[in-house]
Length: 198
Figure 1: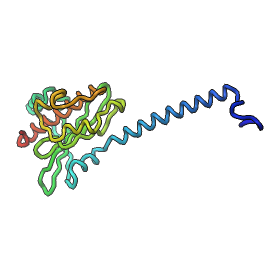
Figure 2: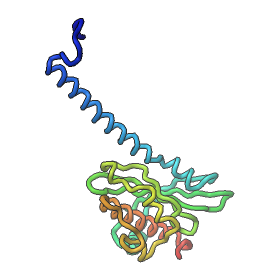
Figure 3: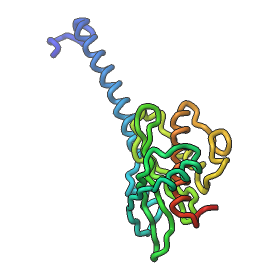
Figure 4: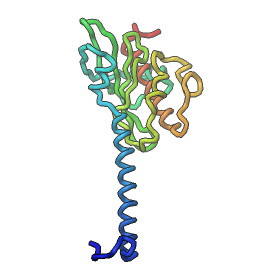
């Protein structure tokens, strides 16, 4: 509290520097919390993503354990080994007809994990990609606009970075991990749904 007749400019210098320090800390905290909020809003739950990918559909969650031969075939199609034979997938139906499938792929980007929900149409082409978890620094998360370039794509040689897929400036490891995840999911889907192959 100021003494009668005192102004803030007559406060002792230690008090002024304390006030500046507190204000600086508050500004930094506000910036950090603000950035965290913006990036957290970019994430979507699996349930929300499934509703957006397959509006009006009945969605059934299944877990598939790939046999050795299926895992080897999927790895060959994807161009890399699969991390696990266990596959989390969702099958979407409207009036009893399959309208699409979605797969969860959780992987390490640099040192921390990212989870993607990759939704496919009935023919096995990418319908939508949603980031449901991203534990790396938020500035490395793939923007939704970048993910949109995968829309309506199927597995093939053009589904590669610097071929049919642009890289992300400043987030190369995210681009590599995301592209590998999408290739894995498309390969697994071809193995599980051979009729969907094109």
